[in-house]
Length: 215
Ligand code: AMP
Figure 1: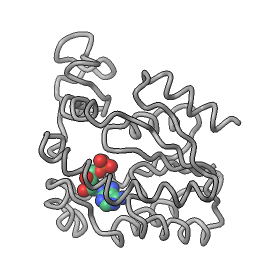
Figure 2: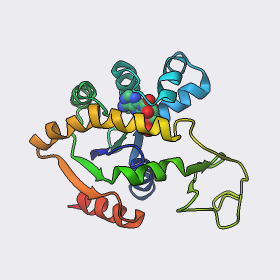
Figure 3: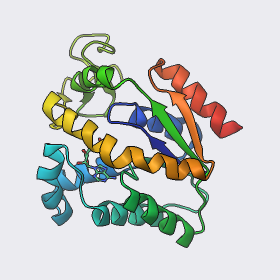
């Protein structure tokens, strides 16, 4: 099974992808995570991507499609792929078709997480993760049980993404509306789009996605 999770920044794609990894042994292919790792490691791709990401703009189609192809090549044919944050432009959607076809994979579903954009700014600007294990938290919606201590691993170090500030979030939203939303009709014409209410609580969203995958 190969699926795309689509929705604006903060819609919950990463959270839901992690759940699918844990529950079903699928593999999450997040171009955002791959790019952040490249920036951290100081690779040539990371050096190119850093300023673009900090501005909330899109990294080039060639770079992200290259990363996706490499990641798929490292996976076993039996492992399902969850595309998270990719494709983000029509050119990337076209590349993904070729990348999948050349590896004998078929796209099963495009799951759109429908959300209210105003609520997203609050969701994004309040989120942070454990610097050690990556568990996600939120200033308002999910604080650690003991203040300043990760529920999962006990670490006291947390981090925030540099692009999770209000100004950059607005640019990321605008990029989504202008470049990513237009790819939905393409998948719709192919009968692949399934819609889920991304404003529902996390467990309900997971259940709705599970129902689609099990159908
Ligand atoms: P994300 O973690 O998906 O929100 O991505 C963070 C940032 O990485 C985006 O704002 C872009 O600058 C860049 N990025 C991630 N995925 C893509 C993609 N598929 N195409 C272009 N840029 C991307």
